[in-house]
Image (cartoon, rainbow over all chains, first blue to last red; front, side):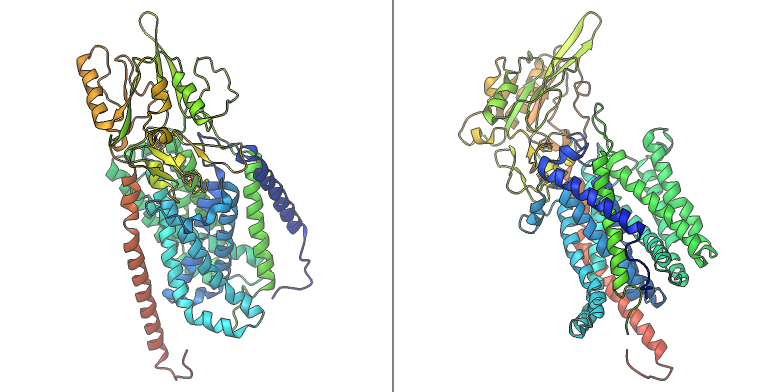
Length: 372
Length: 266
Ligand code: SF4
Ligand code: SF4
């Protein structure tokens, strides 16, 4: 367990709290004066950094929860069990942060629940919204044992244990649904989104890259928490989880290139435009380099090497989601967009809140150890 | 009339902006501060306060310049992207053909703005509780049997109001009867599956240079529908596969455990 002599609120925590406070102030400005007052969003750029980062990257980066749950409980990877609870916590917090960001971004934020009464089954966003709502519930129930154990509430724990496999399978189904549907959202703009990214298989690509980054995030997050909480590294578990990673990346690479070939768009990769450079960068950083890194057995025996490799996957995914939702989308020639400082402050504040919450929960709840 | 429609004849527009003013008046849209961008186009772009606008385009020709005026606004697509992507169904393609917006449903996600190939829906960026705004085809007037305010105000007949099928015929007739005057393309007949606002343009202006997006004939919602139709199957297949693997894993573990002494059942 954690060393009780450590200060709870060190310098790091104070910085986080300040960043959270600043974001709250910015949010207040938005609630009184509108989105125009705190953002550079416009009719030409209706979606900005909050959609690209907080929503698209946020959901993908939270994929570690369902990937690890599948690895441990469906495919019997008992050795990876120590990674599961932290992954669930990351996922749970990740989805809460997505919702928080939407509460700033949505024009009529207090109507977010309208999804439950007004249905448009043709909208990919409708499906995403429902899946996120349901999956958040699943994650809350998957997280609940940590809280229940802490307070020694045996009765509800027993119930949760009995239904746990149902929850896990439901979580996997819901995750594959909305991870892919986030890609479907961009299919509606064949003329706006650059052909290097617009493809009918975008949903499949989104799901595949989410699985890859889910693994990478678990490695990333567990390494950091080991350092912060001064625990033994879970190198064996991480290495086991990482075995699949190069193959997921390889499948992604083959699908992406094969698809471009089928569409006759391979030439676009080398057309020398900004889009083509962004695409090459995204593939090299996020797919090719980490493929070779994680292919090596030596890497999979070293937490440090895997941690470094995971950064590539994460960076590549972030670039990919920005490419699809922002950089790759044609806007009117006269318009431009760079996030306003206050837009960035919201995102930074939300991420800080996530880190802070993870820190506090991991400190006070049995996240790293499971009672038997 | 089954499907309301406009035929906008760019050759007939004199740039008087009566339609623009009539729209503001009928829909009680506030004025807005604008900037001089060096043309008569004012304000420069559509906004939540300006639902229709005359674009002013100047092109040099051998001698002098060509000056064209084009009314822009919602195209009231036959298969509107905006309607299909709105998660809460706040946008609706009515049986008249007009695409309208329901303030009371909207959550303000702005997906409609992304999903519109013509970048028509605009947002009230300056309001604490903003709504989407765009041309409604004067739905309120239509239901009273009146024609839209812009068409009524146009002094030159550049905006013809009528049934879509008839106006397609009318547009083609104009193009055929005066090939020396008209561009052969009837914009909106086929674009993204057809739009209710149709355009004919002068011969020496192509639609792209007038600022119209170059679009295919495929209705945009088919892109997303084609992907979403796999979702029910996805639920069944993923659910079944995961259950099957779980069962297999469990059996394997039991088999492994059996040869040793059976101490306790897991
Ligand atoms: S032009 Fe845009 S806003 Fe108008 S109906 Fe078509 S998709 Fe909707
Ligand atoms: S902004 Fe409103 S009308 Fe537009 S898609 Fe979102 S909920 Fe629908």
